[in-house]
Amino acid sequence: MPTVVPDDSRFQVELSNAGSRLVVVDFTASWCGPCRRIAPFFDELSRRYPAITFLKVDVDQCPETATSQGVTSMPTFIFYKNKMKIGQVSGADSAALEAKIKELSGGEGDEGSESGVHGHVDLVNFISKSACECLNDADDHPFANSFTSGPGYLESDCDEQMMVQRLLAAKSLSHAQGGTLFAGFMKILPIFLIVMPGMISRVLYTDEVACVDPDICMEYCQNPAGCSNVAYPRLVLELMPSGLRGLMMAVMLAALMSDLTSVYNSASTLFTMDIWPQIRKKATVWELMIVGRTFIIIMIIVSIGWIPIIQKLQGGQLFIYIQSVSAYLAPPIAAVYILAVLWKRMNEPACFWAMMLGFVVGVTRMVLDFIYRQPGCNEPDLRPLIIQRVHYMYFACILFCITIISAVIISLITEPPEEYRLIRTTYWTRFDEGDRDDDKENFEMRRNVDLQEKVKLNDMSKEEAGAMVDEEIHEPAIIEEKTFLFYLRKLGNWFCGFNRSAKHKTNDEVFQHLTEVASLRQSRQEKLILNTLLMVALTVPVFTYIYFSIAVKKSL
Image (tube, rainbow, N blue to C red; front, top):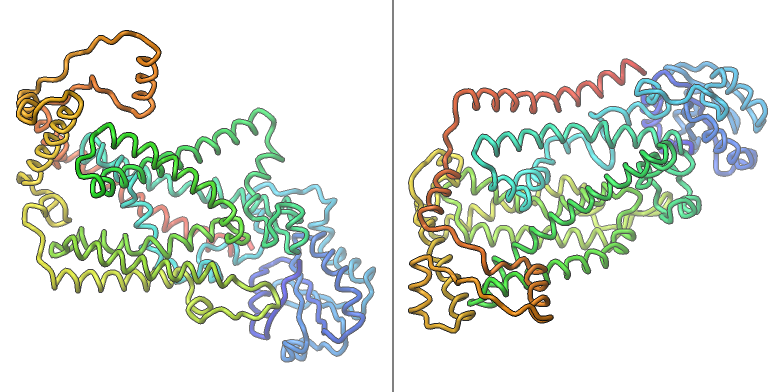
């Protein structure tokens, strides 16, 4: 569809964005009858010639532009290349208009053209130059977002529950840092695996992926806001052979299932270990297992029920929906995380109440976004100013600052944390090899859980159970008759992940394990390799930003 130029200042911007491509400008007016008659044909030409930029200029809205270009009658079609005027057609003559387009473009971009899209250099000829540049000013991701998007990305890549669990399971500090660097390098791949295939899909399936008319979009993807979300699946299903197509779909589904299971397990762990013990003070291991599995089932049901809501609220781009939701929920977590790592005075009450305040503010903005949807084309924007004028990425930065200020104030008016809790938990004490008092608390907690379990399962007194736990004497294997009830109980134990015959480590073994895990010693060779890879991981994204901005300008 042609791009509508809203005002005089935008006209020169659109000509600049077109670069060396041919630009056809329709100078029209709402009161012009011939303009209305040829408008559908002009729209059809924009679909037929995707390599050409088509613009519409209303002379009543852009009078200075019309005057400077010498427009005296409507419709008038003026042709530009490299911002230079190279031709003109006056009147609603469709045959003359198309003939002029073919003359000046050489038929380039026609439906019958066999040139196709062969690579990035060919691809950029089909789309706006500014869309190819990483450093551009767009409505969905403004340029300033490069400096304000840190809080959301920090939360998703540094302190997300499932990622933290994997880092804590690392063999050593070097292994944890190496895994983090590997994840950083993997973040470079989406521009080649997702962004460029999406651009190719938009060019190859213009009428479907790049549809504008709500009725056409509903026909193709059942979403009146747009069909950008089907770009990648459409490319896979249309271009790949049968075997590779099935493999790609299997990989996509496997990746989706892996992410979902990680999220479900992390959420279940948080609920089971942090919330449920507050409800049931003396919960046994068996009970915690059942609660964890049940919570996962509830999460699955909630996720399925949320799908229609996402389809209703996401608009034409699911990625923008995900980014906006993260911008409302992630900054409080990131703010607390940064303060906890960098500031020794940060304490638990400040973490909790600052996050609660941040979540309330963020959820309020998110609910307002859901209630007041973005208006369509030619519709008045009646949304509140906080939504209309403040981009969600800028709001994330504001929310981040609110959380930090509240956390600092609450920390200063409450008691500071105990000194032993700062050992190896802040940036300044990361190499502290002292013993922590809460390590002993963990042993006492494990002993109490074992004691409660043995009291309930073996019907013994607390004194007898305590002696058994202290001496590390475990229950002998009980030989049961293999009846139907036996197999049913065994199936239930397997489903809940419960194994009564599992042996606990002795205190010495656990202390030895904790000592090895807590060791922060690194050899000089390990430090050199990790620091070198860190510099490469920081340099490559900067180079990518610059390359895909400057290189595009040269090619266009």
